[in-house]
Amino acid sequence: MILRSIKKAIKKFIIFPFRQLTAPKKKKFCNQQIPKIKYTDGSWLTIATTPDQQRIEDYLTLQQITVKQILHIGTGNSSFAKKFHATNFIDSITIVDDELDYAIALNLPNYRCFKLNKYSNDLLRLPVKYDIISDNNLSSFACCQQHFEEMMRNYFALLKPNGYIITDKKGMAYHQDFAFPITVDDLKIILPEAKFSIQEHTVIIEKKLD
Image (cartoon, rainbow, N blue to C red):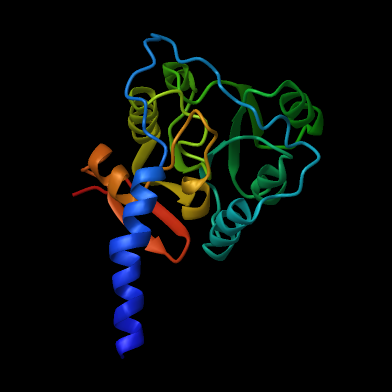
């Protein structure tokens, strides 16, 4: 009992304050009307699906989703589309040319791929509304807080009623040096009208009808 109390005190008064001091500072504005593309991870075409992305795909598989309009952010190796295109309609976006070329060359039924920067308002030019938007790295490459928040509101605008955004806590914590991590509490401030549910690592942000 005493040991547990000591561990809690260390976490509260030493570890957590240290993390707060060393956490990346969110850049509020980048002073760019059109957000710059800042992406340094390169192509994911030949890289295996990451654990956080795999958890999202496993969750959707368990939901037995069918006839859903889905937007997948970050095309990568197109594993998402390969898994779900037969019973759903998949749109995917990327800023990496070889991911785009590979997705188009697959010629999968019900699968389209677009070259778009998710942090720009060009996102709203996508031709349909979505039941599900999947993005495992929400803020990982954000140029600033302003454009990140605009992206989240654009996601919400692209959802159908009762549609949802699905993400993962590990991906929410991952970020480039110029970007920042994001928490569920941060997202609740940006989207106060949303309904949030968390299943271990998986985070669901729902556009719930009253």
